[in-house]
Length: 350
Image (cartoon, rainbow, N blue to C red; front, side, top):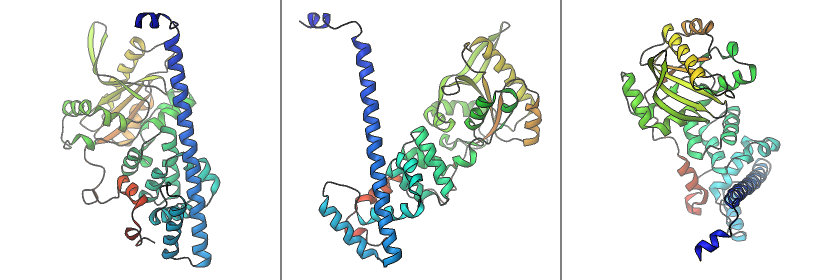
């Protein structure tokens, strides 16, 4: 019977099923985002109402607590109406007085992510930068917090490169924004005097964390990737393919400060990858030198007349946060737990 049943299924059925699954998934995602946007805008409206009355009518904490009780009684199935969360709504409305900005950017990311922005950052432009990145890359709350705590906005696009000279304008801008300086490898648990092979092996053991630090779009191809040139074997430390730039990315790791000869060797690797691996539709291969230090002027001189696109960045093996701050910053889990705490546990916040 099973064979007879399967024989009735058209040959294009698997393709149709796959297409419909993707459509349903996309529709559900859009519906979830639409609900999230409406909820965030509702929270902003509630917060603005509370803020206005506190500023003009002298509302105090007791009134907010009473409002929470009455709203939860009216909407028993709705979460997020605790006194603590009402006060977060007020803070949210105070931080973002312009509704268009809320609607365009902040309502497009989860409420918990907005709470993380409020707790972790003081500057409105920094908050907006991370909000837009969260929307663009679909960062989870934990990834957002990690990016904030490691100061991504101060590192993104800071590598020394020759991209403007050797790449067309659209791709050079994208490639510049792709690279960071410094890269933070504190997740490896290594000391600063670790050797290149030790660091490379540790990066491969922690490949998921490494890809997260590299950024969205990197696909791992291989490490100690073998290239045969003129009958001789050469080995690239790490080879990636960037899905957005549509090009290979060669990463060379050095456990010392940058030296000009490093750029020459990487230039050779890029030529070989372009000839041996690059597809006709691929963009030119990009090189990234990761060093434990660099002299900015020396690096700029070394890249000035290079024919291939190369970037130079430092990396750090120690944790990004000072020891005395670790464990003291509020976590996203703590923020989430505060959304629906009992009334008597939330009366202390103003």
